[in-house]
Image 1 (cartoon, helix red, strand yellow):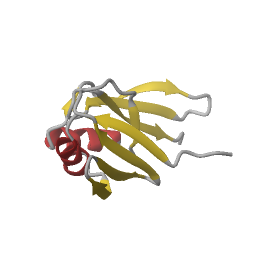
Image 2 (image 1 turned 60 degrees about the horizontal axis):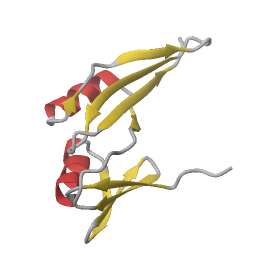
Image 3 (image 1 turned 60 degrees about the vertical axis):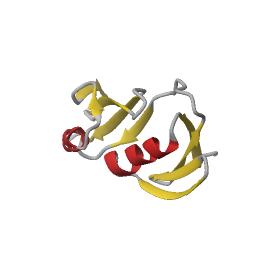
Length: 119
């Protein structure tokens, strides 16, 4: 079965985006070239490509083991949080899915996503 190895995201200004992903979100930067930067999202590579324009983008849902702590940490680092952590679904087995939304450096939505297992 196929798996995702890389996701591409257009950014207006690469230097600003690199600072956001590396310093605000704490994502490991793999390497960069003029106009491109690559980050490790838990085994999936994120490629940021500078376009010079502020394009719309799909929401990326970033895994979180402790959504409350991650929400606080990102807020303290200057991320614009647009919603507090909240449960979006409880599965039949009792596990819960939680999300907290925030904005990237261009004001586009991103989200933290956590799954808590039933006791």
